[in-house]
Image 1 (tube, rainbow, N blue to C red):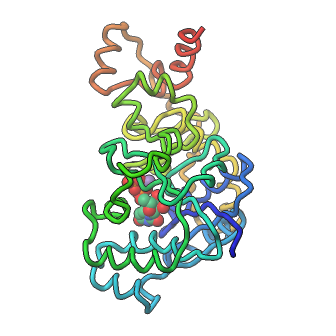
Image 2: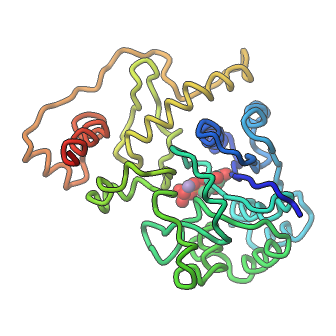
Amino acid sequence: MAAEQAFVTLATNDSYARGAMVLGKSLRNHKTSKKLVVLIGPHVSDQSRAVLHKIYDDVRLVDVLDSGDTAHLAMMKRPDLGVTFTKLHCWTLTHYSKCVFMDADTLVVSNIDELFDREELSAAPDPGWPDCFNSGVFVFIPSNETYGRLLQFCTEHGSFDGGDQGVLNGFFSDWATADITKHLPFIYNMSSIAIYTYLPAFKQYGANAKVVHFLGATKPWSYTYDPRQRRVRGDVAAAAHPGFLLEWWTLYSGEVVPMLMREYGDQPFCSGCEEDAGESEPVQTLMSSAERKQRWEQGQADYMGIDSFDNIQKKLDVFLK
Ligand code: UDP
Ligand code: MN
């Protein structure tokens, strides 16, 4: 019987590949004893593949269109579910006895090897509809039989949300009610949406987060970063928690960009880090606490300034003392 266990992620293009590089580095930095596997699509560049090979134990090309098997047939019936079929491919990793899938837009901030004590299918609730699990982090057992049944389910029923989360919740439909041990604590898949929807809970438990998930349309790599001032530019409040976003960028610019630069050599390459740093410093305006409270309640918190994670942390420290 196969004994090895692995963390698995997926990147079908160079943007998500950057996410996978940061995720892989974050797992290594927190000293995982598990193998790291990345599934890649045919559009990932040679340079990205080379870097992924340095971080991951196993880089697997998954070309659903080219596979000529059941996945290809399923794909012909549901061409809209391309990335989803690629993600389901993780069940074919039967060389491993148990795996934890993690989206490429997640960041590990603490060792999470204990997740391998859990059974299939363990996952954390989705913050938008907690009777569904979020498919950004889940424990599964590779099996060709399950894979076949998943593909069949997918072609027959499709996905109620157009992605893998809809398919997986349809397939593992008793998750919400059958076995509470399959509910991972939210700290294993903490999305920044929780900050806005339940700030007191975030204040109470946010510091225990083990995995941060940058879910939604704006990903960490959608921003630009000034490495000299250690600042993320752009409308930071839109998607991500500034403290964790900064952590992502610190890891990316410090450990991943140098690896990418080595691969690109003289060829043009845009890292997302600003080259001409040091000019326009964002203006920080002062306002009254009432005004600030009003802006906060309207969702216009000044995340890079007065409402930054550091300041929230300071408030928390005072409060806890
Ligand atoms: N993904 C990918 N290429 C895509 C879209 C998604 O490789 O074009 C993979 C990637 O691992 C990503 C996961 O599928 O993290 C789920 O998509 P995403 O994270 O964008 O969804 P969200 O978490 O925002 O719902
Ligand atoms: Mn995601």
